[in-house]
Length: 125
Image 1 (cartoon, rainbow, N blue to C red):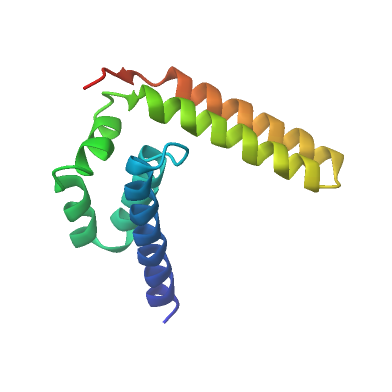
Image 2 (tube, rainbow, N blue to C red):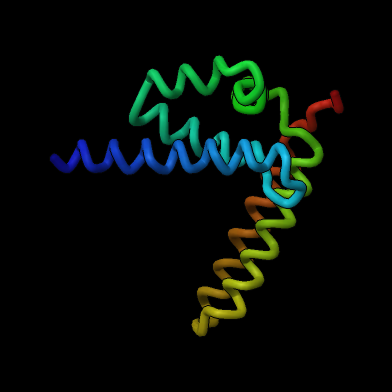
């Protein structure tokens, strides 16, 4: 029962991430690649059929496969992702009253940003 609930939760998060990733194609401030990567991570642990659908999709699959193959992340996705990290981390730092948590959030934001910046950049289409 517990495994079924966890699998259902992962599938739900995966599909919500797909929807947000598709919206990110059209909305300039919503990143596509991170949401599709989250969807792929959820699907690979919960539904091989949905994972295959995502990576073989003619439009969405290229985002996931480019990252998994080490080809890189589109430049726009890098900038938007880092911008989103710093905006959400800033809000979190403002709202969290514990000083040690604020430092932890800064550290996480910096480390994730460095990781994203170190990834290869996909050439513009």
